[in-house]
Length: 115
Image (cartoon, rainbow, N blue to C red; front, side, top):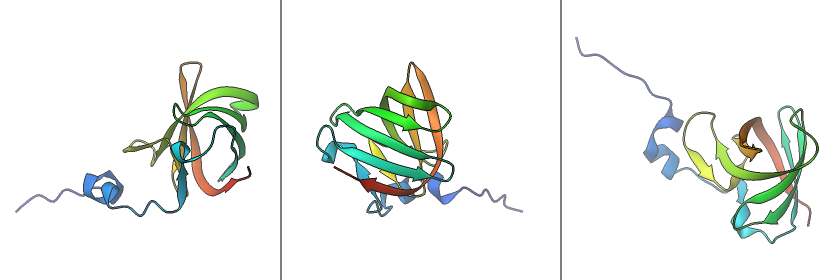
């Protein structure tokens, strides 16, 4: 009897490449000093883009960022699968690096560019 292996669709590269990336933003498309509010399942994050090209940000919100903290937005993922570098997308978790540690948020519910 042939053995069947199941994979989550998000873990298949073809699915990831053909994903509709319209429900989010890429930091590289924003101006420096843009302000963003990102609501996840657990937290409201306030993000100021310092350098869009290098993805340097200041972030506040949640347990890990109680005060404004310098960080780098690595991107968005489905927690352990591929990383959409420099992006924030609804349904995906943000991965934020600060002081050499990576923080992975709960899934994003909404994104609002304020300025």
